[in-house]
Length: 337
Image 1 (spheres, helix red, strand yellow):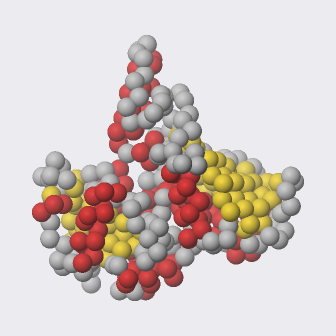
Image 2: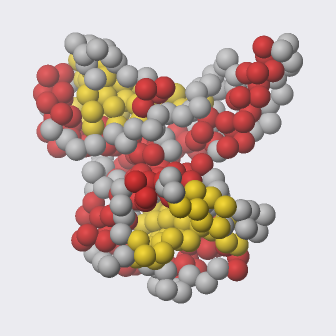
């Protein structure tokens, strides 16, 4: 028997990807509803290669009879409508930042902490973590199971698609403009993004950490282990799709590069690309459209006791957002429905 699914924010980057992945993976559905603001109501949007959905106005939609809501609008929109959907009996899988640190709402990466899904009953909402956190904890999980992680230092190189369609348009327009001798004019970003890197994602906090960096710290603790110390530095780079991270890990016990590689190869959701392969290592351009988290450039760190470095890349619109949400829905239907 299929389910009735509603996708909130269906016209956005992640919403469109959610619809595509639901279709690709053959999720059991009887009915799929695409929801967005009144400005998008009436538009047609693809559901897979052959089907088309007409976008409905979120403000006028009655969630009664909906089984699962995949939600990826802005945080303020989600704050209003996700509780309404849950109150109507739907289970909401929310991709925004609004509910992630609520102690009564599980924050889930299915490969890492699937048992947390059981806590959905408290509020009817399951939170999808931040894109940069998701790919990192997937890579960290099999290592943490072998030799407990003490500390993680991570530098991210995050694509503009993480900031939405307007950000992708800004990179495209600035790049084209530079070749036409036009002066780049930042709008979505604080600085020029074309041919540049911006060491700021989200707002600065009182301690001069950005909100994105804070998310990686607190979400890793909630998902994987509250004892892990995390130091994150997040950078926006002129790439359309795909987040990359250089990760340095310090363990409580010895873990060699060889042991780490074996752990990753045995772990569902991770693909290892090593120097002996044809690729040698992986980049953002090569992971766009892929589902796995890719690990390469694995090496031991001799400057600390029990240290390891690795390069971690994933498609932020898929595993970093839409795919993870659909995987949560699949696990929910399998084990808790």
